[in-house]
Amino acid sequence: MFRDSTANSIGASATTCPGIGYWNVTTLTCEVPANSTSSTTFKLSAGSANGLYTLNINGPTTGSRALGGVCMTSLIVEEIKV
Image (cartoon, rainbow, N blue to C red):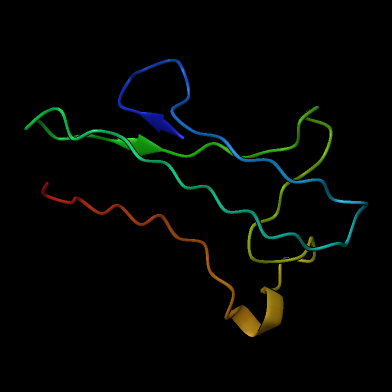
């Protein structure tokens, strides 16, 4: 996960898949200070470690949706006043 134009990641997660056709669930939790009143952009980057494989999100390589399309990918941002 990246914040604004910062080059360094503010959080990361990894998972290993044993081969083509397998499913994995990956969760990334990241807490960052709300140290500005300006707008903030969070960006996610995903892919294979060596760049040789295709990453499919919520579906197999056939283009259909996994489990009838009920899988989901989400980014939840929550601001908490302390």
